[in-house]
Image (cartoon, rainbow, N blue to C red):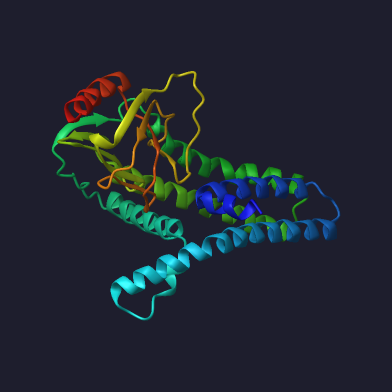
Length: 296
Protein backbone atom coordinates (compact mmCIF):
# COMPACT_ATOMS: atom_id res chain seq x y z
CA UNK A 1 0.00 0.00 0.00
CA UNK A 2 1.54 3.28 -1.18
CA UNK A 3 -0.36 5.54 1.22
CA UNK A 4 1.85 4.84 4.27
CA UNK A 5 5.21 5.51 2.50
CA UNK A 6 3.74 8.70 1.03
CA UNK A 7 2.65 9.90 4.47
CA UNK A 8 6.08 9.10 5.91
CA UNK A 9 7.89 11.03 3.18
CA UNK A 10 5.70 14.09 3.62
CA UNK A 11 6.53 16.62 6.30
CA UNK A 12 3.90 17.65 8.81
CA UNK A 13 3.84 21.12 7.27
CA UNK A 14 2.97 19.65 3.87
CA UNK A 15 0.35 17.35 5.34
CA UNK A 16 -1.37 20.00 7.45
CA UNK A 17 -1.33 22.46 4.57
CA UNK A 18 -3.27 20.02 2.40
CA UNK A 19 -5.84 18.91 4.95
CA UNK A 20 -6.33 22.43 6.33
CA UNK A 21 -7.11 23.73 2.86
CA UNK A 22 -9.56 20.90 2.21
CA UNK A 23 -11.19 21.43 5.62
CA UNK A 24 -11.69 25.17 5.09
CA UNK A 25 -13.29 24.57 1.68
CA UNK A 26 -15.56 21.87 3.13
CA UNK A 27 -16.65 24.14 6.01
CA UNK A 28 -17.42 26.98 3.61
CA UNK A 29 -19.61 24.62 1.60
CA UNK A 30 -21.46 23.46 4.72
CA UNK A 31 -22.13 27.09 5.67
CA UNK A 32 -24.50 27.36 2.70
CA UNK A 33 -26.60 24.42 3.88
CA UNK A 34 -29.83 25.85 5.27
CA UNK A 35 -31.07 22.77 7.13
CA UNK A 36 -29.61 23.04 10.69
CA UNK A 37 -29.50 19.31 11.38
CA UNK A 38 -27.87 18.51 8.06
CA UNK A 39 -25.36 21.35 8.52
CA UNK A 40 -24.43 20.05 11.98
CA UNK A 41 -23.99 16.53 10.59
CA UNK A 42 -21.76 17.74 7.76
CA UNK A 43 -19.60 19.71 10.22
CA UNK A 44 -19.12 16.57 12.30
CA UNK A 45 -18.14 14.61 9.20
CA UNK A 46 -15.62 17.29 8.19
CA UNK A 47 -14.16 17.35 11.70
CA UNK A 48 -13.95 13.55 11.73
CA UNK A 49 -12.11 13.53 8.41
CA UNK A 50 -9.68 16.19 9.68
CA UNK A 51 -8.90 14.20 12.84
CA UNK A 52 -8.58 10.97 10.84
CA UNK A 53 -6.07 12.59 8.47
CA UNK A 54 -3.94 13.76 11.41
CA UNK A 55 -4.17 10.33 13.06
CA UNK A 56 -3.12 8.62 9.81
CA UNK A 57 0.04 10.74 9.61
CA UNK A 58 0.84 10.09 13.28
CA UNK A 59 0.39 6.33 12.85
CA UNK A 60 2.62 6.34 9.75
CA UNK A 61 5.37 8.23 11.62
CA UNK A 62 5.10 6.28 14.89
CA UNK A 63 7.58 3.44 14.03
CA UNK A 64 10.32 5.94 13.18
CA UNK A 65 9.59 8.00 16.29
CA UNK A 66 9.70 4.85 18.45
CA UNK A 67 13.06 3.79 17.02
CA UNK A 68 14.45 7.29 17.48
CA UNK A 69 13.28 7.39 21.10
CA UNK A 70 14.85 3.97 21.84
CA UNK A 71 18.17 4.99 20.29
CA UNK A 72 18.22 8.17 22.35
CA UNK A 73 17.33 6.16 25.44
CA UNK A 74 20.21 3.74 24.86
CA UNK A 75 22.69 6.52 24.18
CA UNK A 76 21.65 8.18 27.46
CA UNK A 77 21.97 4.88 29.34
CA UNK A 78 18.44 5.10 30.70
CA UNK A 79 15.52 2.67 30.70
CA UNK A 80 12.75 5.22 30.27
CA UNK A 81 12.16 8.16 27.98
CA UNK A 82 9.72 11.09 28.24
CA UNK A 83 6.56 10.85 26.13
CA UNK A 84 7.62 14.02 24.30
CA UNK A 85 10.08 11.92 22.28
CA UNK A 86 7.13 10.27 20.58
CA UNK A 87 5.89 13.65 19.35
CA UNK A 88 6.90 14.64 15.84
CA UNK A 89 9.98 16.93 15.97
CA UNK A 90 8.19 19.44 13.76
CA UNK A 91 5.47 19.95 16.38
CA UNK A 92 8.07 20.54 19.08
CA UNK A 93 9.91 22.91 16.74
CA UNK A 94 6.76 24.92 16.05
CA UNK A 95 6.05 25.17 19.77
CA UNK A 96 9.59 26.40 20.47
CA UNK A 97 9.39 28.88 17.60
CA UNK A 98 6.05 30.25 18.81
CA UNK A 99 7.49 30.64 22.32
CA UNK A 100 10.51 32.54 20.94
CA UNK A 101 8.23 34.78 18.88
CA UNK A 102 6.19 35.53 22.01
CA UNK A 103 9.40 36.41 23.85
CA UNK A 104 10.37 38.60 20.90
CA UNK A 105 7.05 40.44 21.17
CA UNK A 106 7.65 41.07 24.86
CA UNK A 107 11.13 42.41 24.13
CA UNK A 108 9.78 44.54 21.28
CA UNK A 109 7.14 45.99 23.62
CA UNK A 110 9.83 46.61 26.25
CA UNK A 111 11.97 48.35 23.58
CA UNK A 112 14.90 46.07 24.22
CA UNK A 113 17.61 46.07 21.53
CA UNK A 114 17.86 42.94 19.44
CA UNK A 115 20.82 40.65 19.96
CA UNK A 116 23.37 41.00 17.21
CA UNK A 117 25.18 37.84 16.16
CA UNK A 118 28.95 37.58 16.23
CA UNK A 119 29.36 36.05 12.76
CA UNK A 120 32.29 37.60 10.95
CA UNK A 121 31.77 37.78 7.22
CA UNK A 122 30.32 39.62 4.25
CA UNK A 123 26.70 40.64 4.98
CA UNK A 124 23.98 39.74 2.48
CA UNK A 125 20.83 41.77 3.14
CA UNK A 126 17.26 40.61 2.54
CA UNK A 127 15.00 43.29 4.09
CA UNK A 128 15.89 46.46 2.19
CA UNK A 129 13.87 45.55 -0.91
CA UNK A 130 11.53 43.07 0.74
CA UNK A 131 7.80 43.51 1.12
CA UNK A 132 8.07 42.26 4.70
CA UNK A 133 7.46 45.74 6.12
CA UNK A 134 3.84 45.73 4.90
CA UNK A 135 2.86 42.66 6.95
CA UNK A 136 2.46 44.45 10.27
CA UNK A 137 0.26 47.28 8.88
CA UNK A 138 -1.85 44.67 7.05
CA UNK A 139 -2.32 42.66 10.24
CA UNK A 140 -3.30 45.85 12.10
CA UNK A 141 -5.72 46.82 9.34
CA UNK A 142 -7.33 43.38 9.40
CA UNK A 143 -8.24 43.88 13.07
CA UNK A 144 -10.36 46.89 12.14
CA UNK A 145 -11.88 45.19 9.08
CA UNK A 146 -12.64 41.68 10.36
CA UNK A 147 -15.17 42.73 13.01
CA UNK A 148 -17.52 44.81 10.82
CA UNK A 149 -17.16 42.41 7.90
CA UNK A 150 -17.96 39.50 10.19
CA UNK A 151 -21.09 41.28 11.43
CA UNK A 152 -22.34 41.40 7.83
CA UNK A 153 -21.16 38.05 6.43
CA UNK A 154 -21.99 35.72 9.32
CA UNK A 155 -25.72 36.57 9.43
CA UNK A 156 -25.85 36.33 5.63
CA UNK A 157 -24.47 32.79 5.83
CA UNK A 158 -27.20 31.83 8.26
CA UNK A 159 -24.91 31.36 11.25
CA UNK A 160 -26.97 31.21 14.48
CA UNK A 161 -26.79 34.32 16.68
CA UNK A 162 -25.20 32.43 19.61
CA UNK A 163 -22.39 31.22 17.31
CA UNK A 164 -21.75 34.62 15.75
CA UNK A 165 -20.33 36.11 18.96
CA UNK A 166 -18.02 33.13 19.43
CA UNK A 167 -16.79 33.33 15.84
CA UNK A 168 -16.24 37.09 15.92
CA UNK A 169 -14.36 36.83 19.23
CA UNK A 170 -12.25 33.98 17.87
CA UNK A 171 -11.38 35.92 14.71
CA UNK A 172 -10.43 38.97 16.79
CA UNK A 173 -8.21 36.92 19.13
CA UNK A 174 -6.52 35.21 16.18
CA UNK A 175 -5.83 38.63 14.65
CA UNK A 176 -4.29 39.89 17.90
CA UNK A 177 -2.11 36.79 18.24
CA UNK A 178 -0.93 37.07 14.62
CA UNK A 179 -0.06 40.74 15.13
CA UNK A 180 1.89 39.95 18.30
CA UNK A 181 3.81 37.13 16.59
CA UNK A 182 4.63 39.38 13.63
CA UNK A 183 6.04 42.02 15.95
CA UNK A 184 8.04 39.34 17.75
CA UNK A 185 9.34 38.08 14.42
CA UNK A 186 10.29 41.62 13.44
CA UNK A 187 12.31 41.95 16.64
CA UNK A 188 14.17 38.70 15.98
CA UNK A 189 14.99 39.59 12.37
CA UNK A 190 17.06 42.50 13.63
CA UNK A 191 19.30 43.77 10.81
CA UNK A 192 18.10 41.19 8.29
CA UNK A 193 21.38 39.77 7.03
CA UNK A 194 22.93 36.50 5.94
CA UNK A 195 26.71 36.15 6.04
CA UNK A 196 29.38 34.82 3.71
CA UNK A 197 31.94 33.78 6.30
CA UNK A 198 35.16 31.79 6.21
CA UNK A 199 34.39 28.41 4.62
CA UNK A 200 30.66 28.66 5.41
CA UNK A 201 27.47 30.41 4.39
CA UNK A 202 25.32 31.45 7.35
CA UNK A 203 21.61 31.96 6.72
CA UNK A 204 19.46 33.68 9.30
CA UNK A 205 15.73 34.50 9.09
CA UNK A 206 15.26 35.23 12.79
CA UNK A 207 13.88 32.20 14.64
CA UNK A 208 12.16 30.86 11.53
CA UNK A 209 15.21 29.66 9.62
CA UNK A 210 18.87 29.22 10.45
CA UNK A 211 21.56 27.34 8.57
CA UNK A 212 25.32 26.99 8.41
CA UNK A 213 26.39 25.49 5.09
CA UNK A 214 30.00 24.71 4.12
CA UNK A 215 30.83 25.97 0.65
CA UNK A 216 31.98 22.44 -0.14
CA UNK A 217 28.37 21.27 0.34
CA UNK A 218 26.96 23.69 -2.25
CA UNK A 219 26.64 21.89 -5.57
CA UNK A 220 24.95 24.66 -7.50
CA UNK A 221 23.60 28.19 -7.11
CA UNK A 222 20.97 29.37 -9.59
CA UNK A 223 19.14 32.61 -10.16
CA UNK A 224 15.37 32.20 -10.16
CA UNK A 225 13.81 34.36 -12.84
CA UNK A 226 10.94 36.71 -12.05
CA UNK A 227 8.62 34.80 -14.36
CA UNK A 228 9.38 31.38 -12.86
CA UNK A 229 6.66 30.19 -10.53
CA UNK A 230 8.11 29.31 -7.13
CA UNK A 231 5.95 28.19 -4.24
CA UNK A 232 6.87 27.92 -0.57
CA UNK A 233 8.64 24.64 0.13
CA UNK A 234 7.93 22.82 3.38
CA UNK A 235 9.10 19.30 2.54
CA UNK A 236 11.98 17.44 4.13
CA UNK A 237 14.10 17.88 0.98
CA UNK A 238 13.11 21.40 -0.08
CA UNK A 239 12.90 24.42 2.20
CA UNK A 240 12.23 28.12 1.78
CA UNK A 241 14.36 30.78 3.46
CA UNK A 242 12.60 34.08 2.85
CA UNK A 243 11.13 36.70 5.18
CA UNK A 244 8.05 37.12 2.98
CA UNK A 245 9.00 37.52 -0.68
CA UNK A 246 9.22 35.11 -3.58
CA UNK A 247 12.66 33.39 -3.53
CA UNK A 248 15.09 34.54 -6.20
CA UNK A 249 18.00 32.13 -5.61
CA UNK A 250 18.11 28.34 -5.46
CA UNK A 251 20.87 26.58 -3.51
CA UNK A 252 21.39 22.92 -4.38
CA UNK A 253 23.22 21.03 -1.64
CA UNK A 254 25.05 17.75 -1.38
CA UNK A 255 25.36 15.64 1.72
CA UNK A 256 27.93 17.06 4.15
CA UNK A 257 28.43 16.27 7.86
CA UNK A 258 28.94 19.93 8.77
CA UNK A 259 25.71 21.16 7.20
CA UNK A 260 23.17 22.35 9.76
CA UNK A 261 19.69 23.46 8.69
CA UNK A 262 16.96 24.40 11.18
CA UNK A 263 13.56 25.48 9.88
CA UNK A 264 10.84 26.53 12.33
CA UNK A 265 12.73 24.96 15.22
CA UNK A 266 13.17 21.55 13.55
CA UNK A 267 16.51 20.25 12.26
CA UNK A 268 16.59 18.76 8.76
CA UNK A 269 19.39 16.38 7.78
CA UNK A 270 18.72 15.64 4.12
CA UNK A 271 17.93 19.01 2.55
CA UNK A 272 18.56 19.08 -1.19
CA UNK A 273 17.34 22.54 -2.21
CA UNK A 274 17.00 25.82 -0.33
CA UNK A 275 14.94 28.55 -1.98
CA UNK A 276 16.42 31.83 -0.80
CA UNK A 277 15.48 35.49 -1.09
CA UNK A 278 18.14 38.21 -1.06
CA UNK A 279 17.98 41.90 -1.98
CA UNK A 280 20.71 41.70 -4.62
CA UNK A 281 20.69 38.21 -6.17
CA UNK A 282 23.27 38.98 -8.87
CA UNK A 283 25.71 40.37 -6.32
CA UNK A 284 25.10 37.35 -4.07
CA UNK A 285 25.75 34.92 -6.95
CA UNK A 286 29.03 36.64 -7.78
CA UNK A 287 30.26 36.65 -4.18
CA UNK A 288 29.28 33.10 -3.29
CA UNK A 289 30.64 31.89 -6.64
CA UNK A 290 34.07 33.20 -5.66
CA UNK A 291 33.89 31.46 -2.27
CA UNK A 292 32.86 28.15 -3.81
CA UNK A 293 35.66 28.43 -6.41
CA UNK A 294 38.26 29.11 -3.70
CA UNK A 295 36.97 26.18 -1.62
CA UNK A 296 37.11 23.86 -4.63
